[in-house]
Length: 241
Image 1: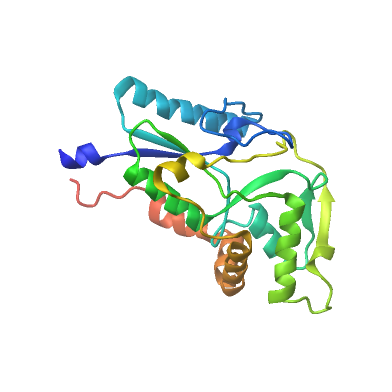
Image 2: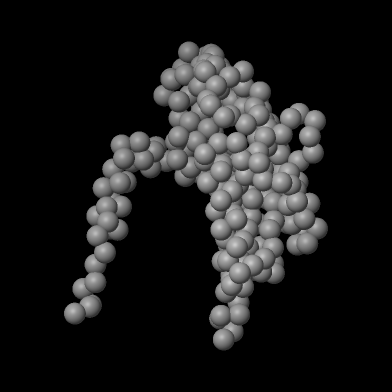
């Protein structure tokens, strides 16, 4: 009975469900209306509604968190920050959509994990919490931050800056201009706040990728898919007759 009473279903969602902000608009709060602008964000919004409906209809003890952009070690290379790091080190161009002014709120992954644990263990069923890093930066800001740190940690052999590899590419369809999270509720209720600055988080992230090129080779070769299929593709029930 005690285990059942302590059970929680936590759905980790995204700030994208709230749509796009202009430069002067207030950050998203838990009361912001849902305004997804792409099929991807619409599917995320639908998932939020689906989870909430189970709490309202059946009393399932659900929790929802809406988080800003994460970064950190082990993030797959198609994501923006690892893409910048990996392409820079491999001498490839650093693609920036449009003019690079799109804004995001960046949060180091360990801070996100601590926030999830806080909500999961201390919050009441039915609650929703926004989680953000209070670190709004444009895509171009992030590109210069990454290349500047790489210039210090692992300079290019020719002495030039990695920022020379920045290249602007055609903007993608439905690219929201700005996301920003107001995380006052989780700070007020539980005292949670990010502990990593952008500088410390990027330093730890870049250092990890530099020290784990074997992991990166495995991911980029897609051999991890072979391991996954070997271990999980076919369910095994040797003990069942």
